[in-house]
Image (tube, rainbow, N blue to C red; front, top):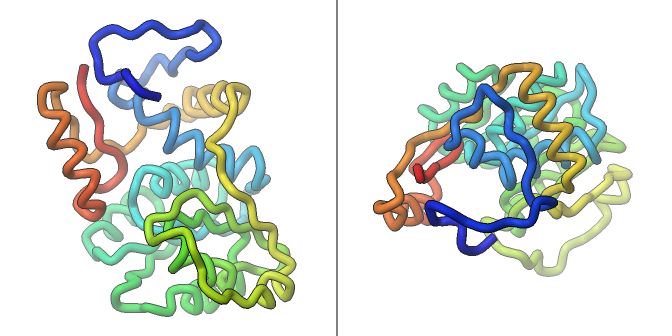
Amino acid sequence: MNGVAAEYVVLHEDGIVHIPDHLTWEEAATLPIAALTAWSMLIEYGGLQAGDTVLLQGTGGVSIFGLQFALMAGARAIITSSSNAKLEQAKALGAWKTINYSEVPDWDKAALELTGGVDHVLDVGGATTMVKSINALRIGGTLSMVGFLSGLTIPEYDVTSILQKAATIRGSQVGNRDHFEKMNRAITHHRLHPVIDRVFPLDRIGEAFALLAEGKQYFGKIAVQI
């Protein structure tokens, strides 16, 4: 929402939830969009179960939360990045397998070779990744569209692969209050800490937005300290 880059704001009581006691304010600030999107798509709507395999794109906030929630659920996570250093960080967090998509452009085929087809994909790319995301799915798998970093339009797309995969494709609208409160209970139970790349003071918020715009220079979330 607009207007929260401030020391004090006025909100309706229905628009706020209690945060897990073990989190800092900066960690809690990562939850409403990135964490809730990953939680809703994987757990609430996706029905992620122990033993499932999740394919995650990149190492931004949604994907890293997806990794953490997959591990929490007992699932295996494959994560992609163009940075081997970031892939090493993902391994340290518990990623099962990693794929450098600069070195392996056909990352969908690599995922198929590893698994025979993944159960769930969190797609943050949009136009240039959706087709490969569908290809990486098992028959009956689920693709959650949570971003459009590469654009919104797929020209002349042949839907045959969707039919052949019997795929479920779901668009994200983040999540609702009930999802948020369930997520916070799980975060509290597992003592999960969000991954924050760096924290900026409020008077340097412009630098934070500039870093965010670069897109590839951080791992997890960027926070602003009030």
